[in-house]
Amino acid sequence: MTYTAITVLAVLAVVALDRWGARTRLTASSTWWAAYGIIVFFQLLTNGWLTGRGIVQYDPDAIIGDGSVPVLGDGRIFFAPVEDLAFGFALVLLTSVVWTWQGDRPGRRSGEEVA
Image (cartoon, rainbow, N blue to C red; front, side, top):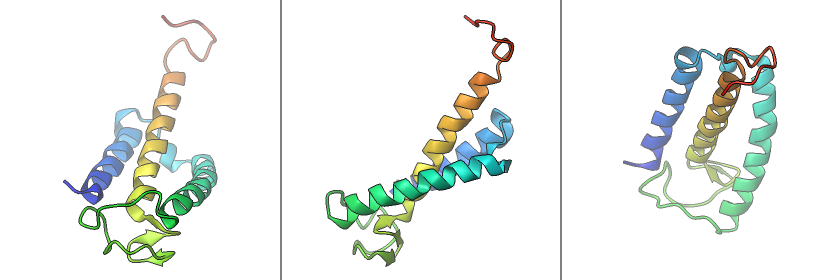
């Protein structure tokens, strides 16, 4: 399975968890998207630096594009493969969903300890 396929499955699974599994619906919140905008900015800086300098390299058969490392285009945004951005989205959303869901459990809102 390619990185592209894994990424698509991860994004779909986490969005489904957000919307229908945990019912946190973070992706419907402008607050979450504003916070994610800050995160993706720094993700682009980090990924761009690592992939643009050749520190991290990808198998061209596993990602979109031919393996060249342009700043923009050929399946890349600021040197990073679009799969990295989408997979990062899935990871950040999953962490946020679990964090929110854990905080919404009974007893958490009133300050009670839950064993």
